[in-house]
Length: 188
Image (cartoon, rainbow, N blue to C red; front, side, top):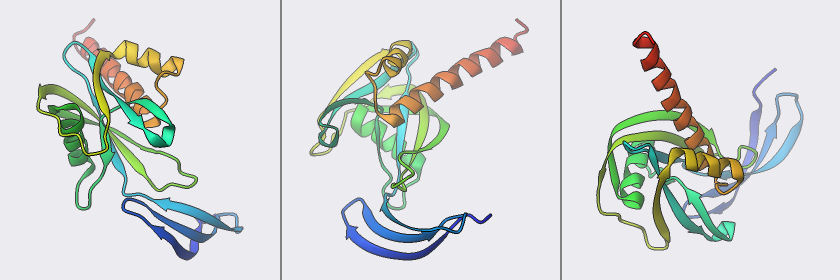
């Protein structure tokens, strides 16, 4: 079975960030379909955890979601910028933090049925404070809370943003695995 084939691509709209196309595709089973696809350059998010095991979350107003969301510091990858540099830049701009330790937590597809966006997730540790540089149009409140509390918010529906949910769960799993590995190395 093949991986599908793009037969035709018609531009519908070119925005500042996204491009919308109507694509005729032959699927792996041979069926042909027309799909509206939103092309996005991708993004990166940082799970910043301090020495007390507190995580930096942003309470951010999002018009598209009709209110406030709890999110990780994150943003769009600029042309020519790596995902790692995007995570570092966004952590500095939105949360006023730098980190000397960066660990990849892989990536997610935000909405693969219609959206090409891939979000790269990073664990940021060994933090230092910087001045924030919020962009015009960003309404952000910075909050620190224990990682366990943030995970409880994931489970009870307080946190609904997908990159934040996945980032927090993956960071927690990485930290727990690292602790288990250190314990095994010590012969306990």
